[in-house]
Length: 361
Image (cartoon, rainbow, N blue to C red):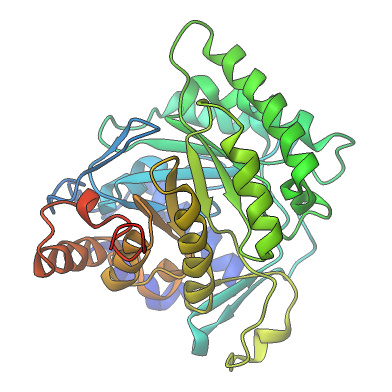
């Protein structure tokens, strides 16, 4: 057990956002960190369209390391990949505090942070100063400033800035806490976004093979909206590697019991598991074999990770569960996942990807 796990009970006594700030400061000090090899469990996987090799399929979701300050220490907990951000072109403070709320009884979190970050300049300097380890790819999640007159221009700027210093890029158009941002998931707006981002990616790549790019979606999409997105990404071209499903939800399940359940913002953690996995399965039913899919939302165990893999994900991401279980959870999930794969007769993660889809049955 690492010092980070031992400190968890003390950190949890702090308000949610203060606890996160204390965790980041502690990680930056680098005291008492483990050094868990990400390939300890024999669950390596390669995302075929992205050609991104992962030592294991368990990743850190965006939101934890917004300013690319602690990806190096976080890589020591056994993650197969990490995602920093969301970063916007200009620094912004985000929404007024308090803006992060634990739902302890439900093992969930509600946040309305609003892309608080130090901006692209700081973010890029951090990644350039502390390059990712070769065995743990580091992605950059880019977003738009709340006051921007042209959201898509912000994504173009983000892509250009982070391209040289990351392993892959995520275009985040699904946060519920920036007014109007989710409108980019609409068919016409999404076509415009993808057209302009393709140009930005190819310009940044020059004559080299372009780095992987993912699009992060919301779980709060109707069947018609999902169908339009599937149709639009199919027409995007080879530069778009895949989708991350999903971001936080504005829905509130009827069985939530925490006093904080009425707070506004995006809900993550255990209450998101079922909904995000259903959307993942629906999208995988249409796009399996065409795009790489990363499952995100509600993962707190090896069984949760396995469910998303069987629903069509090549890899998964988590964040909220760390608030309740500490970073030691990463090794536990990896070990549980390896055991589940073996129990079901799968010799690799790839063999299990999409196992629950009708097309694979």
